[in-house]
Image: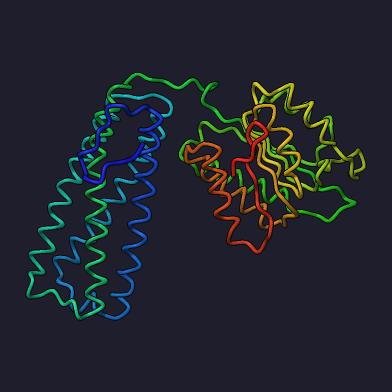
Length: 356
């Protein structure tokens, strides 16, 4: 749900719990981005010497206080966001209200501090470094205004006090199956698994994502893992082609696991499996076919190299760990993939239709 442009003025009357979680996650991103952007302008002013020699000490001091304040807000909002995934308590709503109230005060104090030090006569718009300092002020004040809205989030959260999430219902169970047969070019599937797990463990909802890794998979490894682990997300990483994925035999050599077998397998578990990621070469045809079972499936339109495959996974699970859904996580994966030198383009299929 969209946030209001004026802090404290958003209408939350129709907001769901999922919207609240989304908004808090967006607040964390906003804090991070605002601090980073203001830091860029600050570094320019500091490097030139303008910050130390021309910016009043009182404003420098208050600027340092604001950075510490916003860092504290980030820590507290992140903590609240994680805790409400388990149970919503009255103290969560009260803490969010206090954050909103405090940021209203910070917004006012920032404005007073700026205008006290810089009346119209002191504003040196002909100096580019002054403009950098003004940008630092503007970005932080906009952030304070935005975070006033957290008070409204707290008010809406009161409607969900006592709400608990069933671990079984809310947990993502990610089954990562990988294969790199000895008779083919070695690929870094273990590194990909490690990076995915790192993204999950550092995420906001790590308590609600279970990561299971099965390596050097044989056909029976895959069927047994899906039957026993009951995953909601299945990812395969390894070699493949349009009509099969490559798994291993007892000696580590290639066995082709054909498309029709994949279709049959997922048809048995379509009520549990919500998404499949085929992070292998030329897997788009497989993705389209499996998606007809009502599963969201991501496949690659052509050959994909190690680094590109890993960066797509990094982005996908970074977003998933931030509480985003599969389509959003898919887009985040594409963002990180886009900086790699590759012609591979992941495609998202749902119900046999291309979504992206």
